[in-house]
Image 1: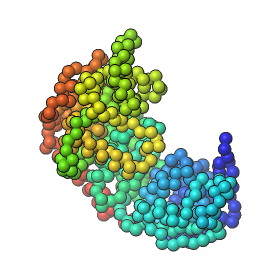
Image 2 (image 1 turned 180 degrees about the vertical axis):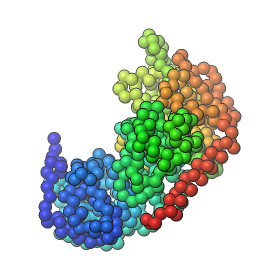
Image 3 (image 1 turned 90 degrees about the vertical axis):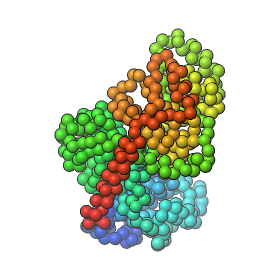
Image 4 (image 1 turned 90 degrees about the horizontal axis):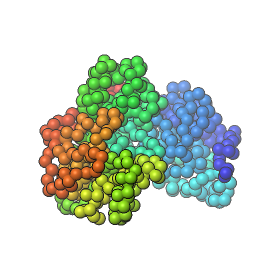
Length: 522
């Protein structure tokens, strides 16, 4: 195993002077994150009025926030100053790290780096365990790209200190993101919805959805929408001011939301806007004032529809989009023979369709899923041929690191769906915004939905006029007719959707404005 800097970690007292020089650029009354805090020499340099937040890959002290930047981990923080001393040389993905620092910093970034001008030998840099090679110009470009301008530099030995300040400071608010080994683009569609509704007068800060209790830093409003939760949930840190809207509590998570601390927290921030009636009824039963707010992706689709004039100019396409449509496999092994033979007939679709099976895990499970996917949707594949487009919402972890790129991908896909002949999907966060944008949509359900899927889906399917329940034995001609006919009648009333979307936008903008009008912290 190759040696890394962790196996050769050491601290030289000579570095104290560099930390002291960097600390001289910090204002007295600041919230500072020491990213890669090491021995925490910075703590000794700060005013008592300053709030110090140490961050490192292992717990240096009890108050250290533990995360490993080389595992794409970043803490739930929002600070005045990010302090980065002798760390950047050891970060593998400097682009991701820079974006994360910028997003979580309001005013100033102070960093040191030994650039290629001072240490040009790549061999020596690797001997020092440094994993990257950047010039002064590169460092400045990383941060200036996102609105931080260089206001001072200082040489300390071979290192250069960079002091960068945010050119335009906007009031910030938190939005929720969730990263997993196998992620779901639908989670980021919900994040995009919150951002679109907040508007351009505020700036989003990305907070990890299921660790809001670990938040440290400045007081911050946060839009709490989406799916909860994969692990035990605790009340968010007191410095967060949450707006609960479009909240979905899974059946498995009810035991965590029933805890007294969580119920008391929800009562404090009631009324709670719920994405589904089951969540609303659960909260009401526990004495929490709650109402049905619908999903924020209603409003996302309606807002994006305003930008759809360009689609008419580009013209329609003949594509039929199959996006993670559900399948119901046969339970009798012998019945696999015919679908398997049929798959040979449609070998051309296998490479694209294979991506849809990512959530099935093991290769043999993916293969069985692929066979039945092609078998059950053959009636659509046969007449539309090369115009059938397979897309999945599954995301590898490496594809979940650039949120802005994901948001652009979502918008681009939704625009494509509006141009296409039809969208066939079982993904609710594809179906809702696409439908609200005016795309022709067929929503497909499996007849054996589990409790988790039923609770999050069933309160929304009434909006889709074209919906199909897939049962064991395949699809009927009815689905083919839904895809092929020229027009799909409107489902849930247009007026009802507009009213829900308007109420969602008003609630979010009111919460953000009220927070900043009532606080003297900024």
